[in-house]
Image (cartoon, rainbow over all chains, first blue to last red; front, top):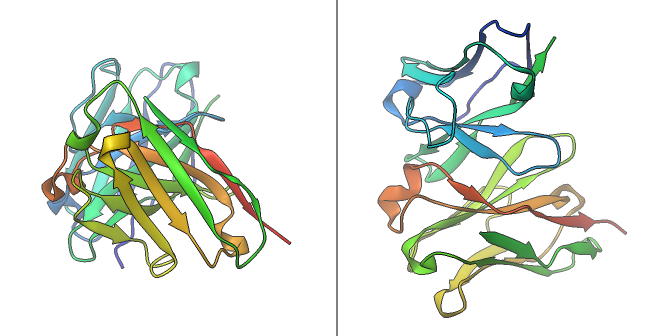
Length: 108
Length: 122
């Protein structure tokens, strides 16, 4: 079955850039979506279709996807960005939705 | 808005039905999915259904035990769970896709409910 691999944690100082990777076999051929989840809350889409942002999501959030790695970048990190982040794809071979294991972003 | 219900404490081997009511939009125009999350783990996809209820898919861990369905006349999504195991203990979220047909299965899950807790324990 298809798998997505994320680093368990990323730490970043306020104002700096956080980069979260999402690795998968030829993930560049799929559309990758990213979700942010804060404690006790439901996930929220922050990037969809690799690099598009829903309305209301700051421009500080951006995404890219090529080869075997998709990336979520959070520029000018703020304290409110501290959360768990998940990548997600649809695997048409297995007809499954697949989530990455999640990355906890800690703002120092 | 999506509102789940039906969670609770159930013994191993038991059955449970979860419901998810959608409001504020045309329910039939959107595919739906169930996603679960354990306290220690991340998000795990469970099942997906198109807007008409004709196409469904399941995670390997629940296939043959869970059934996803919908009643568009009641704006309600269901997850019928049987043969429950301790490992099925989780918060279960319903989530709405971008559109109705199977081509949208690759799109993001744009709207989520707040979840309902299912605890499987003796």
